[in-house]
Amino acid sequence: MASMSLEKNRIKFLLLEGVHPSAIATLNSAGYNEIEALSGSLDEDSLIEKLKGVHFVGVRSRTQLTERVIASADKLIAIGCFCIGTNQVDLPAARRHGIPVFNAPYSNTRSVAELVLAEAIMLARGVPEKSMKAHRGEWQKSAAKSWEVRGKTLGVVGYGSIGSQLSVLAESLGMKVKFHDVVTKLPLGNAEQADSLEELLRESDIVTLHVPETAATQDMFGAAQFSQMKSGAIFINAARGTVVVIDDLVAALKSQHLGGAAIDVFPVEPRSNSETFESPLRGIDNVILTPHVGGSTQEAQENIGIEVALKFAKYSDNGTTTSAVNFPEVALPEHHNSHRILHVHKNVPGVLAAITDVLSSNGVNITGQYLQTAEDIGYVVVDVEHGQGSKALDKLSSIEHTVRCRVLF
Ligand code: NAI
Image 1 (cartoon, protein in one colour):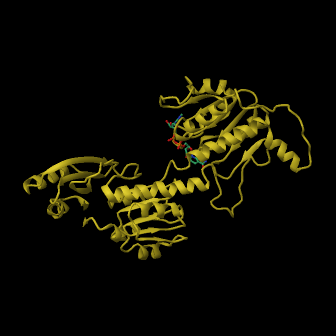
Image 2 (tube, helix red, strand yellow):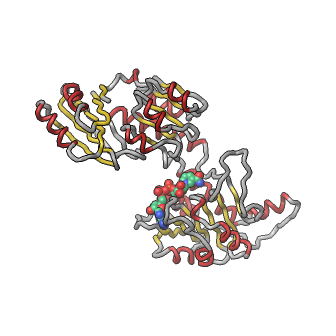
Image 3 (cartoon, protein in one colour):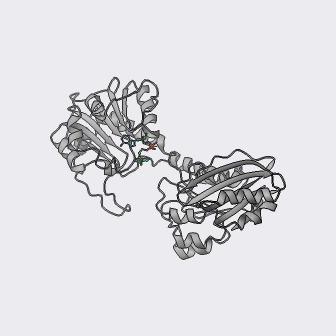
């Protein structure tokens, strides 16, 4: 597929599932105004029909972008998931068609960090248990086992975006922060990287998980880890449900080895709000249970709208694919005095040489070149002297193994 860049007012965006208005505002300020926004999602056939002539589609979690949908979308150049997860999109199929998929993995970092900090304070004061009792008419007025968090040690397992943000907030409350991470990380503030997970568990008054879901983190917290924690310590998991062996957590709570817990994510979660939530943690007074809402705030929704819309605008304006989840990532500078050719091809030997050959044998002067590959796809971006882009487009599109080729003026 070969295409010349269009005027901005001819580039069509379709946003489904009530994406936050911040997305439209962001696209408008980047000069894009051909935007249709629908409140619901569409089934496969309606989506195929609706995507005709659309260049960018934005979805949340309900719209399924299957191989059939992607293959039939004649003009589609990028997909945006206005959320964190991307499993509603057939990512390999999108890649094979030369279509990058963007999402917003870090828009809700602050929301999670705030919730965890609030839970740490509530649990340190025994509030969940006192509140449950008060609901049942019991009056537990006592300072026993009720602590300030000031001066206490917060153990952060996984010092990434959320863990490090939380670390800064916790220090501002006067907490000490220890963290454990598989990677050596630059500590923020006065936080210290523990030599081992065992050391962190031994020394922390509150342990909170912020690791991703991987084979290595599956069941990472079970009986052995809980027994290494201080007696009366607090445990928080707002990462992923598969990281914790829930029955072992229940045992550590029922034996009163742990002082309390806050759990936002579960190994099995209801698929919709109409399903019943089942968990052996239900009914334990000193446990805060929340329905995977760590990152669910209005601010996060607004940030997601801005983040994905900016990625759309950057890709449209200059070909940048940074943070695409299925596609070679290239961060590109502006290209004011040159034409930019975006060439997506199958990642087989010889294509780059063929591109260079075509350009040099046609007297096209290259002013910049960027290359990145991801699995079965290669992405070459070539800046050529102003005026030479259209000359090169047809020739480059006919190179064997080309998936798509686009010129930006
Ligand atoms: P991130 O990728 O920025 O940080 C993860 C950190 O964990 C990295 O520093 C990484 O090196 C470290 N890590 C990876 N494997 C590890 C291991 N085996 N042991 C120790 N450290 C390890 O991710 P981010 O954005 O901070 O998210 C963390 C978790 O929070 C993820 O599981 C994510 O799915 C979850 N999350 C939950 C939300 C909710 O609503 N409850 C919302 C947003 C994220």
